[in-house]
Image (cartoon, rainbow, N blue to C red; front, top):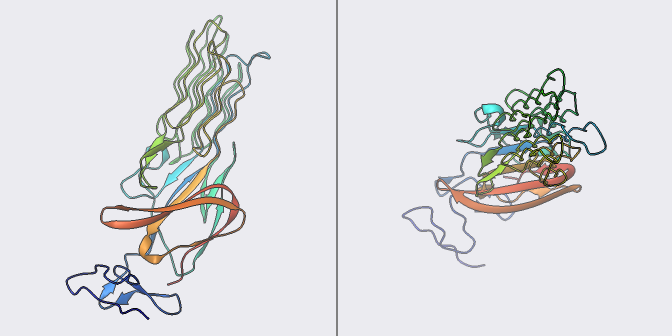
Length: 314
């Protein structure tokens, strides 16, 4: 067996089998207080985003004047970051040895779940002369030649409200879907509403913006469609062609004119000193490590499926 050495000036790795602040025993367990060094707090931070809503259906086969889909609900416990709807980060989870958590990744228009944390699916956009639907973020209202329709509301601490559709004697354009970081823009008599912006997170070590709302559709090819919100929202239909879908695994809303929203995602991180967890059958995931604030983190990004994730034993 190779000899293990200890740097007496601090918890620095010297031998190849020695981990900072802890060590593995012969049974695979972690000795959490070896030679006076202890593990970091057993705290797990999460980002849970539901699937985005679909853009509304228009007044004819071309799907003009429809509202954009709202982004899926956005819930985060990452310290220093925000949840959706302008909320502060939620409380992180204190995990136990071998704790098991259910994970469900919502497809377009479906909830995402991690343990008891549920993010609500984005609201669908309204069709011509129809209101947007409530969701994690609300769907934009469709344009109208008569009465202004109701824009879809967002869910508290998850996302924002959608935009109003325009009311014009002719060529009214749809409102943008709400995003996790901002409300959807209102449509006008010439331009579809812009999808609301998403929220940025560095839970994987790099900043990524997710959960933007879908843009509202234009009435006809002479008008300008709304652009999708930052974070993957789809563009509404208009003079640049058909609408576009929300970006996969961002929970973004689909563009007005029937495009679907993007699928959701669940991401977790915890101090890497605890080791690797176990991803159950039925889940698609990636994992990696990075250092931030003097702590080395391990993250898991779950992008599809339903199953169980089990924390390391210690």
